[in-house]
Each structure stands twice: as structure tokens, then as C-alpha cells.
Amino acid sequence: MRQLTLLISLCQLLYVSAVEARGEHRELTVQDPYIEMHTGPGRGYPIFYVAERGESIAVLRRRTDWYQVQGPRGEQGWVSSEQLERTLEVDGEEFEAHRSTLEDYSGRRWEAGVSYGDFGGANIISTFGAFNLTGNLSIELSLSQALGRYSDSTMTNINLVHSMFPERRASPYFTLGTGSIKTEPKATLIATVDRTDSLAHAGFGVRTYLTRRFVFRAECKTYVIFTSRDDNEEIREWKAGFSFFF
Amino acid sequence: MESRFLVLLLTLAAGVMSLTGCGRNRVIDEAAAGEPPVIEPEIDRRTIEQAKIDTEDFEVGIFAGQLSVEDFGVNNVGGVTFAYHITEGLFVELGAGYTETGLTSFERLSGAAQLLTDDQREYTYYDLSLGYNIFPGESFIGKSRAMNTALYLIGGVGSTTFAGDDRFTLNIGLGFRIMPLDWLAIHADVKDHFFDIDLLGEDKTTHNLSAQLGLTFFF
Image (cartoon, rainbow over all chains, first blue to last red; front, side, top):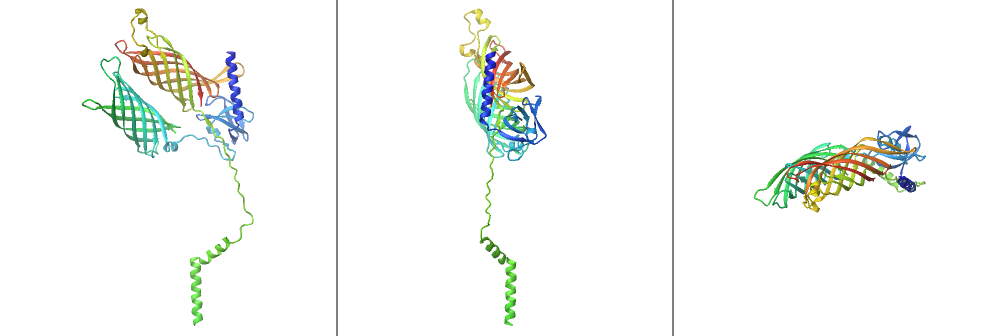
């Protein structure tokens, strides 16, 4: 236990000296009568110190909407972005804490997310990445795993997504794409073989901007699997999930 | 008569010139072509390059512990986690783990009978979970040291590869995060991973409990 404490203290010492040696932190001047420094990055953590008007503070790091700052006497605490916006930069401008807004959402380039749903009776888990070509049109690449009672499948898909009102908080979209599916029947079934088929799919959905970089989406798709048998297989999929944009 | 006509013509010409602005242009041209100003202002703007702020919303780490696989004994488990903190309370986590399961009691008693091959005994899983810090707080160690902590609830979906098949898995758990440094966290989690398995002929839901310790870094 003593070694562990020693190790932790050593790490902390090394880190603190590294921070001080760098000296490359954003310097801000308090403009409000005072700003409150919390012991942790959250509303519930107690306020243990206040920096007064005119005092200079250095911003060490950001976590979600909280900033860790260091006061003139070396005290370190966490300040909310709302309070930090009431401080001045070196050039006299007010500090701007960049919080993602609906505008950033409309102008996003990259999006990545996960979703979960029902794929013709099986549970499906998907991850996807998307690149916005224009305001309305984006291209998506997704990887899904469907886990059913009699078989498991992995799917890779590429599709185009057309968003109808990209500048609004909520917008419906249409999607069209193609891909391939690998189906593995359960090991407990007898005399079955794995197979890989190509597929095409079309669907619609709705995407809603929630907060920060967070987006909710729900969609319904119909897949047509081009099997080597006489008939093509049609599968309906419903899923909902979250995504982030950059 | 002739001189009166000349006066009229000149007056008209002057009027047209003043209307079209020919005279004005000429005055400006003359001023522009004149001497340079006495004081040449040398504007040297101070450019301030402000340091960027390090955003640390991602958390990556490793964990190790014990996983009780129903019917297959308690085994060592290890894995990796990757998390993104959306707000001060909410985070998403992607985790993956691996363990090798032991023998069932039946296999031990019967001696020779083997339910699974060695490959099928390998248990790997991944999960996508949503977590919420229900009780953020501080822990006090000794007289002068306080560490930020949080008790969080976590749950999600995933897949487990075991006994030759992938199985849809739900997980739910409770975790405790203690932060000795602002960028380093120690986790202690208890989780239940449950899925349906038809290994012995009929479907049954198995509950696989894990207790694990983790070390993560914020970046």
C-alpha cells in the first residue's frame, strides 16, 4: 500500500512538473466579481475556492462542459463553461467556450454511431461512420451483427442518405444502398453451411439533434438478399441508436 | 453677335463639364499624384497566439477480474474499454473481454465426456453500453488527500462468442470510479452478462457475473 501511495505521489509530482514546465496554457483574466472553483468536473462537487476579478487563471484541460483551471497561487479547480465565458482573453475579448450547437450539427462533416434493433426477428447491433458530401447528401459505411435463434449474420453495407431538412433539429431521411451478408447457421443445427450473399436495401428514418455532439436516430429498412436459391429473401429491419458528429 | 455666341457655347460647355464631373476628377487626380504624406504610419499589430485547450472526453483502459460462466466455472477475465463522456453524468462505453472457461461438473464427474472443444471453450465478448454517474462525490484518504469518485450505473447490448456461436448479450452493472489523478482512474465494476444458450438441448437464459478492476486514462 505504501509503495502504491509512493508511486501515485511520484506520478502526480512528475505530472505537475510537466504541466508547469510546458507553460503553454490558455491565460484568462476574471471579469466577474469572482468565479467559483469546484473540486471536480460536475455541479455536485463543492466549491473550495473563488478567483476574484482581475486575477489571472490558466486553463489546464476541459472535460465535457467543465474546465480545470489553475489560479495565481497554484490552486487547481474546475469551473463550468458558463462561468468561464465571463472571463477575458489576453487580447481583451471574452473567452468563448465552444459548445456544439445546432449550427455545428448542420455543418457537420463526419458522423459515427451505434444502433440496436430488430432484423427479421433477430437482434441487430450496428456501428456506422458517415461523411457528409453536401448539406443533404451523405455516404455511410456500416458494420452490423445480427444474432438470431437459428443463425448469426455479419453485414457490411454502403449507402447514400438523403436528409430532407438538414438545417432543422429533426429531419426525416431516405437511404439506399448495397452490401454483403455472411450467414452462419447455429452450431446446434445439423448439415448447414455458411453462406455469403450480396444484398440491396432501401429505407427511411428520422434524425434528431439532442445536445452537444449527440444525435438520436431511428430507421426502418427493407433488405433484399440475392440468394443462390430460387427466391430472393426479403428482410425488414427496425432500429434506433445514437451518433456523434465531428 | 459672334462673341455672344461664343459666351453661350462656353457656358454650355462648362455646365456639361460640371454635370459629368470631369473637373472634379481632375482635382482628385492632382491630389493623388502629389507628395506622399509626411508621417507614414507603421502599423505593427500584436498577434496573440493563444494556447489550445486540451479536451479530455475520451477514456481508454484495461481491466482484469473474474467471470463466472454459468455451468463452466469461475475464470480469469481480461479486456479493454473505450468510453466517451457526453455530459458530466452520461457516457457511452465500448468494451471487449476474453476468458477461457473450465470444465462443467458433469465433465469432471464423467471423466472422459467433453461437451465442448478447446476452441469452443474460449469466451469472447463485446458490448456497447450507456452509463450514468448516479453518485458523483469525493473519497477522503488520510487527513489531507481527497479523490474524486463516482458510482455509476451501466447497461447495454453486445455479443458473446461461446460454445461455437455468437449470442446476443445484455449487460447491466454497477461501477465505482476513483480518480487519483485528473487523467487517471481506477474502476471497480460488477456486471451481469446474460444471454440465451441451447447447449443442452433447450434454451435457457444464463447469467454470467463478473467482478473486475480496471485502469483507465483520459485523453
